[in-house]
Image (cartoon, rainbow, N blue to C red; front, side, top):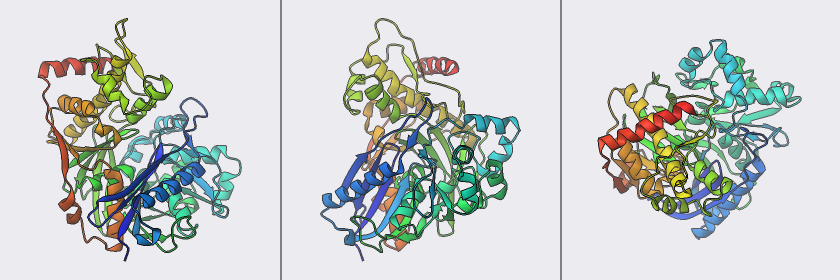
Length: 492
């Protein structure tokens, strides 16, 4: 039996690998960024070869950091950017087109067309989702309509569709396994949320042949074993899989109904454990699967802000305000407040609870006294405002305010942002000692899938809070902030 579990956390801007021991302590970690492709305004693509190369490099570096070999691994767990869509040839393994990233807005017209036909209430009831370019179904339809010969090949069974978890599994197993887990499948607009199975009517709506779809599996269990992977021996079980936000819920030990977490990554995602039954939001939130372990299923309510850490990248790369992303906090702290500047980070439309595909980023309140520090602070505050809107919608759905939530993701290391978030919500926030909870969740699911750990209680026993943020803003100050935000959002 191996000593370690390997977690592959395949994100939007980079691939991270972590090697963890039986106490879920990180022994080795590496991150490798990869190229972002922007063919047109509003379009975002990835080259799967870039992702695969970055993943292999990260795995090798993490093993070296842990002074470990592939033979020391008991299991592999995968977590991934969720709705990003890839279509590839089963024989050659080559994609027919670049992966269309979850942020991509090219299919907004398809979604609006289906909305105009009155399809959204039916789709929402079936899937828990809204008709938005965010999800995989419309991206797949675009590929079939725009890649010559793709539909005919798909109908013959020659092509395979997958979110990035499926694409990595395919490559890790040498093409032997075409599977996904229930959390990723729940983000496609093609799965019936009650039955947790592909739905013929939904597939027909988006023109998706059933032959391209992967097998849906629980989040823990054997998906396949490694074969022909550089740096890894054959036969290591890939035994855990979940979309990044659901993996973070597991990593945050949000196992009881009502517990919630928010991940601040490229986007920001607030999820609350809704218990064993599907919940339909009345306030623009999504219904999704939190995880499935054996026959045990947990559902979740989710709110998504499409842009969070990505706004810091834009300030860094697009405007050149600083050299490294971590410098944004120091710059923002150099001023007492945003100077009245409000930044609506709708650089890829507005997600829940607004769901305005056409919205675009907006900066208001500019005058000659505004500096780059004010812009940096306003950008961070804009992310916190987005999460405030999500939390308010969630509180209305459950009929009571959220007592507390846990935070993770790279951007949660920003103390200025976390304090402002707590101030806006009037709610305590807990940040764990280990903020790589997405990878932790993937590792834990991988270990559960091989019997390395017996159940959820083992993760609860090792979860530790690192810092707690208590609200300290006065109510009238909070309301002034919120009034400026609401005015700006209405104009975006």
